[in-house]
Every structure is written in structure tokens, then in C-alpha cells.
Length: 338
Image 1 (tube, rainbow, N blue to C red):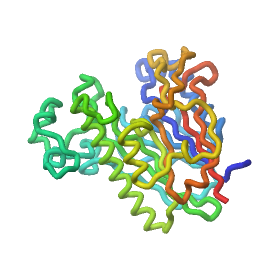
Image 2 (cartoon, rainbow, N blue to C red):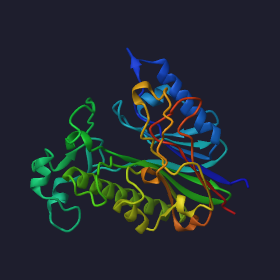
Image 3 (cartoon, rainbow, N blue to C red):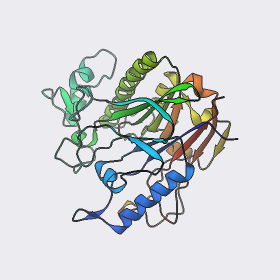
């Protein structure tokens, strides 16, 4: 069966090793393998996460595809959530939205006031926020990575671990059907139990994901109304697991997990490789990759109108040409639209 439409979502892991501004041979080799693995699936649409400006420099193009990348200035650590569309496929429109409180890279989705107003939504105490270094005078919570800084710092310092995020989108026309196709990467997860209560930072990150999801949904609803379609595909790294409250929140919003909806499934059930060797740019493959689907952090969700048209869901190999391409594995979904 030949699908009319397919998508691939892949978090390519942000770091590329370099010496004096020049990428190392290990980094170049990992970029080559990422590129070859993506192209081996020949998807209609590709969504990348953690594709920083360094990635743009290392992988300036994909043969046979046109890139749709937000035209905004970023520090070297910030990702674009680029979308690549196979040449010949009609792109009706494209754009992006920052999932932040003031639509700049310098803040995150929630403000201090929203977290402490006691309205039953995103409620946290001033004391808990104080333990994270958040100040009542800092109403717009700062991104971990403002322009000109890096990601160094304590793992429990909210100023380092809360990140500005965006959604990137294209409107496609496939076999006469309009499809809203979205790529995003939500707030870092950091939780030790299903209810995120082991540390205030875990709760804050969960609330951030919820707020980012809400902003993403508002933009999608505008696009659906503008283009008169109910067809939506949302792919990306959601930084939460299938057994989480946040996953339930997404599904309760009316979206269907392609893993569940697919008629056929292939590959391992995890999408995150615990054993990725980042220090060697993935050049030393680890044979004991987790196959536990509780490490499924990367998803493709679809609207009800497309849920019955999901034919195949697959997860790519954690090893390609003797290299671990990333700490994540690519997710591939094929649709039969007819």
C-alpha cells in the first residue's frame, strides 16, 4: 500500500561539537547520518526539533525538500522547529508563533501573576516559586536562554531550565485536502511521578507545557477557521510520556495519538534513547537501547478527521550506519487519505 501522505518527526539533539568554530569530523559524520536516515524514509513532511542555528550551518538543506523555518533571530542554542516539505507538494501558507507570554524569546509561557492569582489554573505558591529563584518583581518569567547567554547553571535553577518555545506550521494541499501541519517542542519535562509533585520545578514545567499547548491550540483554531479545514497534524517532542497527566490533557483536547490510531505499527516502542553517547557525538553505538514505551516522548497527534486515515506508525532505528544519530529516534506516520 502506498500512502498519499507521510510525516517524520525527529529531535536531532542540539549539540554539535566544534573546534575553533569548525565542526569536528565526529559532528559532521553525525549530521550526515541524521540526513541520510531522514531521507531514507522519503516522507512528505519532516519536522525537526533542537535544530539550532548551528544545525542550519551544518545541514543547510535537504535534497528534494523546501525548508520552512521561522525568520527570527535566535541565539546559537535556540531551535527553529523547521519543517521540510517534499518538492512538488503545494504549500498554501506557512508561519510560526512564539509560545511565550509576551511573544518574545526572552520570556516563557506563564507569568508570575498567572501562577499566583489563585484562580484554580496553574496555581503555585509564592514560597514554592521563591525556592526556584523566581521573584514577585519578575512578572514575565525569563527564558533560560536569553540572547547572548548559554545554558550553563544548576539543573534545578528555573532561570536555566525554563525555555521559550515556538510552533512552526505549514498549510498543505494534498489530493485536494487542506491540512494544517504543526511542528513544536514543548517545555523540558523533569518529573518524578505522574502528578509532578516531587519538586516545584516539575509542577512549573508541567504548567508551562499546558500553557504552551493552549497557545498552540489557539493558533490552530485560527488556522482551521481561516482555511476551512478540520485536518490537523501536530508532531514534535512533547517532553512527557504516554502515562502522564499531560498526555491525558492532550488527548482530552480532542486529538488522537497516531501510535494508537495506526492500523500497522513497526519498530521499537520508545522514542528516546537513554544510552545515547553525546560526548562522542553518537559514534559509539549502545546496544542496550530501551524498548520500554514509557520513554515515548515524541508524538504525532491528529484531529478526529484524520484519525481513521492513519495507516502506519513506525519508530526508526537508534543506530544508523554504526552511529547513534541522536538521543531521540525518528517517528514516522503514514496516512491513507482516500
